[in-house]
Amino acid sequence: MKPPLIFALLTVTAVCLFGLIAAQTRISMQPFVRVGMQVRDFRNGTNPVLQSEYPPPASALFYAFQENPFHRSFNDAWKIFMMLTLAGTCVWTFFRANKRAAALLPAALLVCIPLLGSELIFARYDILVTILLFLTWQAARTHRTHSAGIFIGLAASLKIVPILILPFLWLQSPREKRRDVLLGCISGGGIAIVLALLIMGPSAFTANMDYLRSYHGVRGIQVESTWAGLLFLWSAFSGAILTIDNIAQSFEIMGHTMIATTASLATIAGLALLFLKMIKDRSSAVTFNPAILFLPLLWALLTTPVLSPQYFVWIIPLLLIYSAEELLDDPYRLLPWALLGLTILTAALTQWIYPVLYDDLLHFRSFLAVVILNIRNGCVAVLIAMLWWSSPNDRSIKHQKKHQ
Image 1 (cartoon, rainbow, N blue to C red):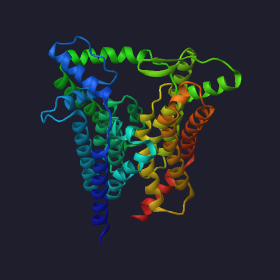
Image 2 (cartoon, helix red, strand yellow):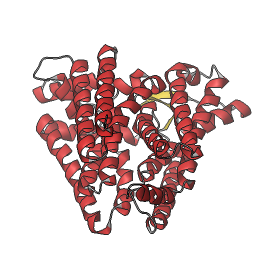
Image 3 (tube, rainbow, N blue to C red):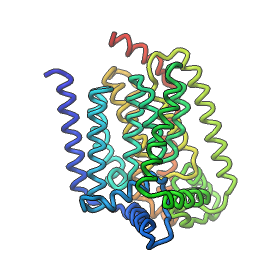
Image 4 (cartoon, rainbow, N blue to C red):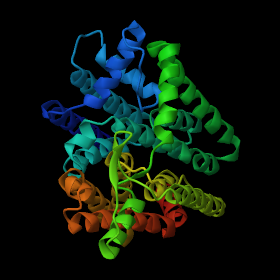
């Protein structure tokens, strides 16, 4: 059997298995249902309030799922949309980018179900961000820079953080195609905004934006962040009292206002240092370096004071695919095995924190929860170091020679 046919069969099998598990999994999407109903009521004039903490394109999606013309439930509409998106992504990747990667995407998502938990995979819309980041990677590796920009623009319209990838994607693109990256990103974001305006209407769009700004303007130190983990340790050893409250629909540590400023400076400094490294690496790079997708996101996850478990859905599947590809090219290298093992550990610890130990963490009932939280956040730091100190250019040269 020829390799393309093998990859096709593996892709179809993995997608069907993922869909079967999704169909059989009971999920609750109440926060997204609430937003969809609020958009509906706002448009109908029966409720003047629209409190959506999500960007308008995401709110428009929730409204579409809620009011779908097929009269399906919100959950059914979401599962169908998710599966169509995954299947379409695999088809595009198989024929336009990389046949092996087309099979690895659904396989990685299947692995993430037990690792991260079905709630994070199926009951959050972050999997759409994962798919768009994957498409960005596949488009960039095949020099479809305009498409890569579009995918980044779409991802950033659903969650703001992926826009951090844009300058690194621009830098890694051939000089003559860098303009296409920017135009593609503007196009992707513009498409998302226009669709949101058409679906929600201008008034609902404006109300959504107003609430979004006010909501994120009061965010504090979320209990799963690196900063919260360090504060928990400091409290455990010093006896200092930490106050946790439910602010902006998330549990956050009160006070310590300087941490937000410190976190912002740390994020900017780290991204600037990474950009300088990429400039140096770019001079000798032969092929696209996927680390430009992983490192900015991992650094943002490490330094942000606002960290939710579903954010790991963006990066864990991509790291699994990256490690698997490296091992398939050269199974005797130690680094990909270490990267794969650490990725799996990070995912497993994330699920252990949420939902298993989450309540213990909030109520200071278990020092184990504090230890696990800090170990998980430490794993993110080690992942950054491993990707930082790896030698992607040498591997790119070997990979190119192997396929010449």
